[in-house]
Image (tube, rainbow, N blue to C red):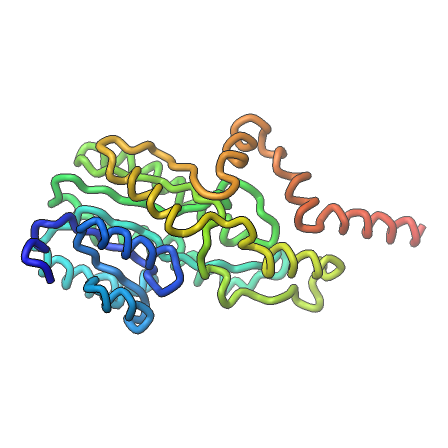
Length: 292
């Protein structure tokens, strides 16, 4: 550890497994001279960060006991303060609303939303002890648009954006900045472990090929390079007066324009065509005609 480590700006990042956005955040902050606390459910997934001198800790955002254990360690190492909290950990779940497993949905919300609420509550005393505290919420454009076969993830990110808005107002008297990041498609491993196809009995089975092609195999086509994304976010977070919402990464401005000027149905035809729902509508219409 550097002699000046105690004077460096401190940052805690969740979800730092190799290949993910948190991993890139940790490296960037380290390169800029910050004291980084990189966390993940398993410390073994952060070996490359340890190799370059970054402090790594196990932290499962869905487990309050784990969060409090990490807080205790960080508090002791920093003297009871934290400058930046980057709530990055998240999981995806590609499924139609009619096919979802509620067990999986609850697991997703524990990581994507409830865990973040717990992180903020637990680390708030450390942030309040900082002279320039900031909370960064890595949300998603999915919280603003009806991406098909993504209902649980969409809902969790919409909740996160709303929560971040409220935090910004509530924490302003204490000088704590809150940055909501409405992220477009970014290079990451978030789709790892997602279903590879629709269930055989799904009402959407006639467009399973479209689901596999657009939602799984080519989901990351055109994704913004992760290093570009984390640089944009960190630069904004370090400003004396960061914006409330940062729209960034692939398709961010398109989504902003549609959500601002086209009304809630502005996305419907675009997404229906992209994900095969327009095709399914034609199939169902033809079936009805055949019956008649």
